[in-house]
Image 1 (cartoon, rainbow, N blue to C red):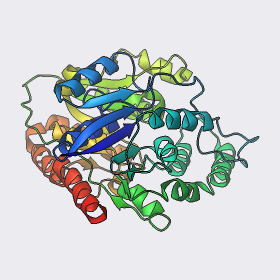
Image 2: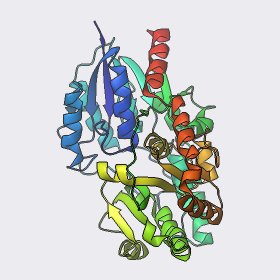
Image 3: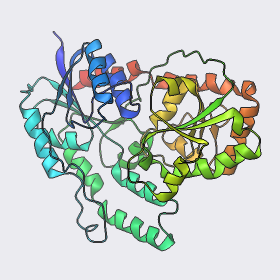
Length: 400
């Protein structure tokens, strides 16, 4: 008889919203070969109302059980770090942790059951649960905040940015110790990210779990328009990239007489409150905001990701390889996907002008660069879902 494995996540795993949700659905489809999977959704409205019914239907189609939290507080976010609180670090929301604990306790998880917790809130809530415990860490937040501040454009002047970075360093000075504390009672600890691993390996006994992405054959339709897309769950996560697309890539397309052959897509949710300059960019007739759906996945030819932000694993690049898209990104991203090589499987440079020149050449000489697509798919041989599941199977055998 199969053991129960409770997959505890903030949202429901699905293949419709990309990112971690896509990795999760790929992983549990492999894990169910050895275990009886029960998905536990601890944040009711983690995805928008359009995604949730699709995610529920997908799980039912795969005959995967799921349970969703019924009630949750409205106050789920931590306070912003300011000059008034940076010296009083708080890395989690106590109310949220209490709610998750109450919810999990109702499930009557047994001692010989397995729980796999994603994200620090779930890990902290389940740290004292009497079961076989696996922690899968989220992007480490000290690096998230430091890099986002360091890479910010037009938001801070030099002095303000320096002060903000110093405040963040003080605020997160005990963050790695806190991660160690909440994972101390876990039997296995994983991260998807080589970069994150390098930052905390001396503090926490963890290992890298291969990022689970399916390798499928997608037939690209011949079309006149070359679609360049940027993907993010929210535009707030990549204001800088959107500005670079508008200020650098778009003018070069016009200068090279390619604008009528190219469509620029922003595949991301747009909240009501955004900076004025971002609002102006979105009103540009050459910028197209589109929903994440099958059509844009089929239409996209190139993923534009100029960010020098290496935290996490950047699953969007691996997803691009799986869809036979070209990838244009910064050299820094090699820190989280070591297999990336310029002009071997992607276009890559930390100099944006050089990167854009490479894109211009690609658009004009696409057939000459098709080897990038073939080599991109080869990268995925290291990230197939069965390899991720097999590592978990093997590691569990050593402790059960």
